Image 1 (cartoon, one colour):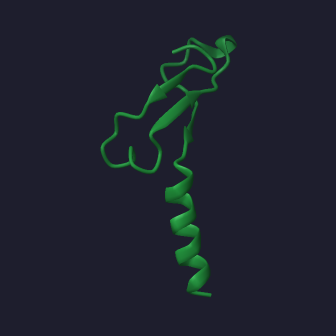
Image 2 (cartoon, rainbow, N blue to C red):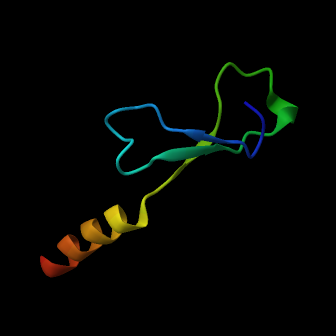
Amino acid sequence: MAQFDVYKNSNKNTHGAYPYIVDIQSPLISELATRIVIPLGNISHSLKILETELSEV
């Protein structure tokens, strides 16, 4: 994984809400066995959640 590369989210539980992830880990710490990523969300899914939460207030 290279910094700022975008990947398809292969996790079946979260793919619907977050179809892609972006790797943000700097190459300066590439010796770590883990990666730091940010999920890229589906805006329509996020808006549905927000609308539901706001209607409950």
